[in-house]
Amino acid sequence: MKKFNKTSLLALVLTLGTLFPLSTNVFAEESHSHWGYGGAANPTQWGQIKKEFALCESGRDQSPIDLKNAVESTPAKIDFDYKSSPLVVVNNGHTIQVNYAPGSSVTINGEKYSLVQFHFHTPSEHEVNSKALAMELHLVHRNEAGKLAVVGVMLTKGAANPLIDTIWKNIPSAGKTDTVSSNINATDLLPKGKSYYSYDGSLTTPPCSEGVKWNVFVEPMTVSEEQIEAFEKLYQVDARPIQPSNGRVIQLHR
Ligand SMILES: [Zn+2]
Image (cartoon, rainbow, N blue to C red):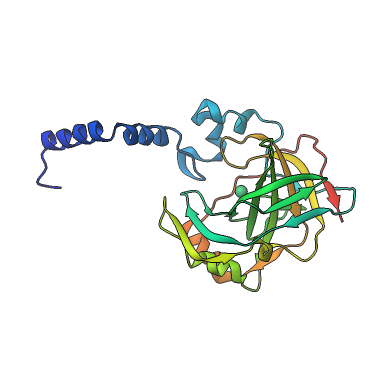
């Protein structure tokens, strides 16, 4: 780069801008809406970054929350119908996400939602009785009306999870997507015990949209210390702090 003087560098930028005007605009938009977990764009600032993120600050039904003082409710009845899917791993700059093939779903209270993707947080975003765990898995589902239902699985230190091993081995560099020739089944990420907490919340990342049905399993799954450390090398912290419950009822289904 030393050989470039300022004039030739400017000429290059102008030429690229003419050749790729769209990508230049996209880049400008991206840098404007930057958010993160530390520094100037940390979670306490999300609501100020752009007006589309306002709910992160003004919302009354935000997630995550401390799952405590739960009220005994109807028995557990989430029906899982997960099929296998090609493994598609996305390193999106905020987390490691696995995009899921169409055709897998859950039915919660008679409402069917399709599995779209799952991703990971460290430490856990929700707390159970004011305690965070090592990590948390979010299985994100959407119904035909566009309503979201997330199934959360707390991950605690213990035996390694074989499916997570497969995912970790195929993480692309930041901003990239890796499609692998092997198939996975998200059923391998669900605990045996099907008791769960439920409450009405939001996305835990900008734009923090509300109306998200949250369902968090009581029984955690285990991940090994090595698996936790491998994730932390990429994302040391990617968890939004606990939000006020504002009197919301947490139901316990078991
Ligand atoms: Zn999440």
